[in-house]
Length: 90
Length: 117
Image (tube, rainbow over all chains, first blue to last red; front, side, top):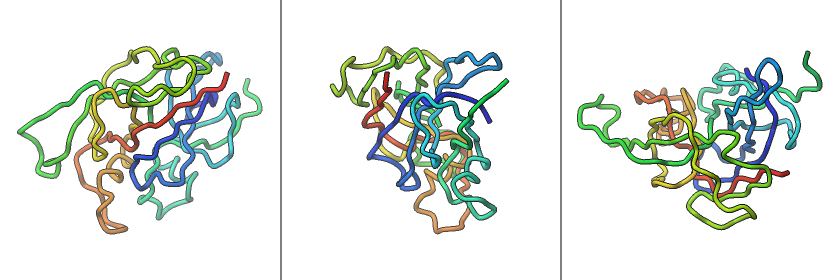
């Protein structure tokens, strides 16, 4: 997983069917010191995260488990999902 | 997944049979500085928002399969790994295992990116 900050929204109408109904947020990754690294991730959001909020993003099967806990979730189209809204880090 | 701009096309004649008919695109990921706060942009040179098009993205190119007929200059979302195989195998029956030899695919052509100040 990574830690990052939600910076915005992405909208698309022409998309794979598996993305229907998913909210897609743009997340700027942060390093160990809390600085942004420049890397941007598009993540599915089920927690109603807002721009400016710090979040963790899970990838791969971890991301699918956010959308629908496994094991029968390999039909989901999701490789990154917001797993938590972060209140503090030290 | 990441947000990127289609920079071109790759084609090949020698490839695994499962990849026959798959279109391959070169996509350049956007980085944080490419999309300034307040930016609102559209994928294909549209004019939504106040700051117009973002600057050209700057990172390494990613080769990805495309089933959405994206073109050069389009802003797209690219998924990696199993999600990419799911995207290009959407016509398979539920529960069947996607077996295309790819690990990145265009899963959406972006209409709009909105970054509040």
